[in-house]
Length: 178
Image (cartoon, rainbow, N blue to C red):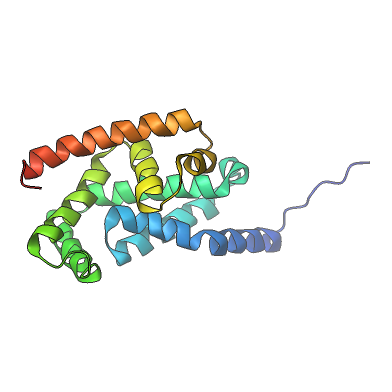
């Protein structure tokens, strides 16, 4: 006789709550890294977890929850940035420069941060997530590979491509003034 796990509304709620609490910071940081705006990051977080709650069988989450949620946060944040109007983008830049006053004290630094958020949103989502994990979150290539379920070689190649695209974007936007 086999015993099967009976999925009830209570166990679903408990599992979901645990998943949410364990990964809130990871998802928020990923979303904030792309959007540059705390309210947009919260919206991304809420959208992501609501979508997850509506799924009947989130198999991908079960295999690698942190990796899945990080990728989903990056994709959802990129979508949010791409659909944001120009006026909202300017508001976001103002909030970003207020939040990062220690980093962006002058107009030039603010412009660089604004450009970075837009440039990350234009990268392929896989490139953006690998770049953020490596250079913003500070994970090693091996840790990024483990988190995303890919090889270290894939991480290295993806980082190389992301850096090349970002360097081109820097030259187009800023010229040689940086």
